Image (cartoon, rainbow, N blue to C red; front, side):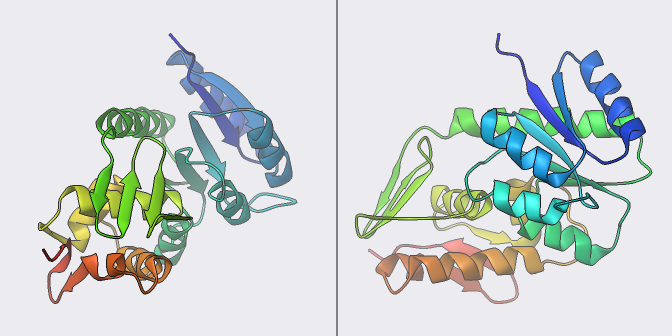
Length: 229
């Protein structure tokens, strides 16, 4: 069985040592980095199953690391920070974070979140096998490729997950809370703006094609994916 490798990024060595201790007890292989530049360098050289990422990092901050990471990789990210404002949480999720833990934290809780996120990721990959084909739109979940009029477009991991979830559940209406739960995999906290922002970005990337009309706003409720016959 393949080792599960986790990168822990924090400028406080005592926190890295504590997190490493608990994760290694679960059988995970743990690498460490103490600034954003070192983290990006390690990510470019080695594949990780999950990243625990502090926000307030020297050299390159965690926001930037997450943003750069999402340009190329779909690695699950748990953001770790002393900042607990709702704005920070929303920004973290919009940049592509999968979960958010505020310091001071329980290492047992962090470990439980790591296990839950790894489990969700594995389940999603198992479920994503068949391509979805609609007029002007092709979605291949195994390769994570989206084509509009036979031309591939670039989506962030969360944009892809949101589009795939809606398309896979065609004609069903989902509230923003339900989309947060299903796509982001965390219980709703604070603003619903994260979903609206991703919907807006998806529509812009789908352009003026017929595919852009498939994502419909159900006023006062949420969104649904609908293809007119």
